[in-house]
Length: 108
Image 1 (cartoon, rainbow, N blue to C red):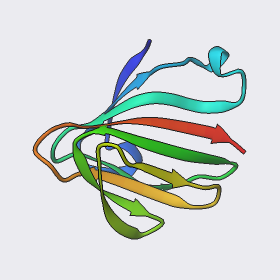
Image 2: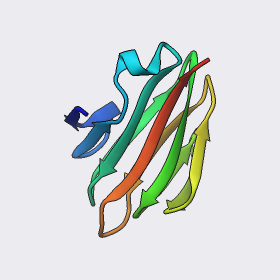
Image 3: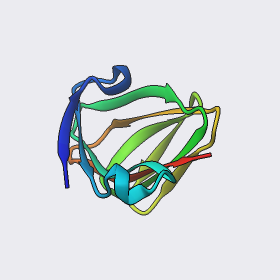
Image 4: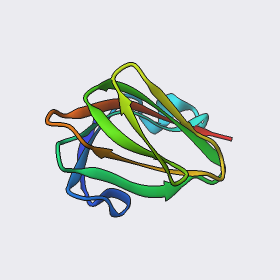
């Protein structure tokens, strides 16, 4: 499994750590990403839109502020978010512990 640290992802603050669970060959063209993502306190993943794909987050631990196509709401462990094709989202860590979630991008 490959792990990468991305600074200012999608214009966000700080960095995001992505631990890829499946590689491109294992996803067989069905998905673009299946990974565990960590956003440390004070960091965020900036607002971005999806075109020709949808993305689902499943929050494993921590809490954050999720932008669902511009509408803000709190998310915490055990919750999911769904961003369909043509819509956008962002996520920032609003707590004092790491915000960890699974991210799945499905090609439409």
